[in-house]
Length: 213
Image (cartoon, rainbow, N blue to C red; front, side, top):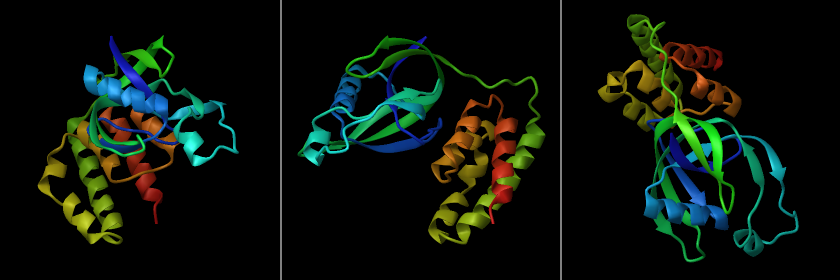
């Protein structure tokens, strides 16, 4: 069982093997970052199902920075990792990177205030139905399509993706790390995150890429 601090963010799905930069301004989450920096506890970032409580629309920026904002119901499956503080600004806001390393499923709430801490279990891929050769072939097909799409818009990024280290990744790692450079609808990305085989994730990704003009 792993206890993590929970950071719910609407429409944001994070994946193991990626680094997530965040700008933290709410007091409860600034406190969370500071506590986790001291304790070494991982921070989990999760998409949300709905808003439970909304802030007042008339709040000024100063009031927003000094009070808690919307409270959300989190999803049960998310990624977590160690937090690296990049900079603390004069008004207390914090710039961080979270280095995602684990895919987790929430079990119970351990703490609710000032921020949530939850107990979780690690999610592992099922290997009984995997076909390494087929997965590797699909990975290569996907990567060629990614290079084609990104190359038409960003030659520098395409050159980065053309490095051998990308194809040296296992299909399992590749199916997560690809989302460091590509984003889709959060519901579809949540589906990818919850899939429990590399082949299934790659198949979802290929269906998405096949529809992109």
